[in-house]
Length: 162
Image (cartoon, rainbow, N blue to C red; front, top):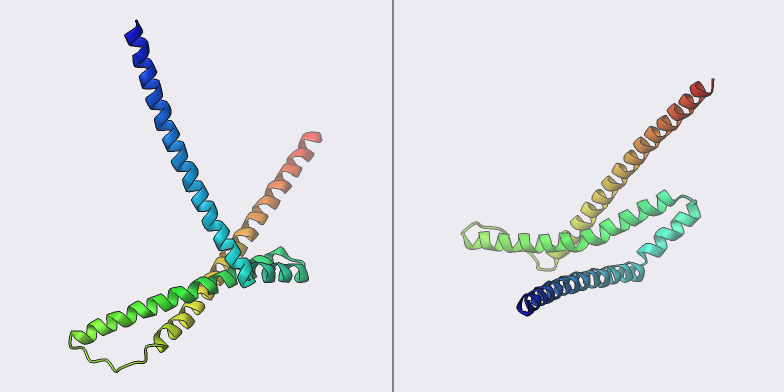
């Protein structure tokens, strides 16, 4: 009897220990994600993205304008480094092709990240405007469906009351 109780006690402590380790890992991951999001939010505040979006929203008195400007600025800010890195990687691929006896004219090192940043900024702006277009169309479609639902519910109430 005593051996059986100590066996269950030992198994229970293993389960509790395993559950505690899993909870600590999940809590640690949550803290890590939260810290990363705080860094991203502070960078956006530091760059003036959030404040300029909010100011434009207050001036125009339309939250949709603030969201549109926010998406556009975030698209440009994320597109610039992505474009520069892609141009840099492309440059190294061209260099590799030159080593394989494909003749390419020489280029200046500083122009490649600059052109990539410009291309990335344009690409980010296009992506942000595309997201804005999708969100606006979705909002219009959902609003239309909601209005239809309200009208049909009001019609149903009128027919029941008659």
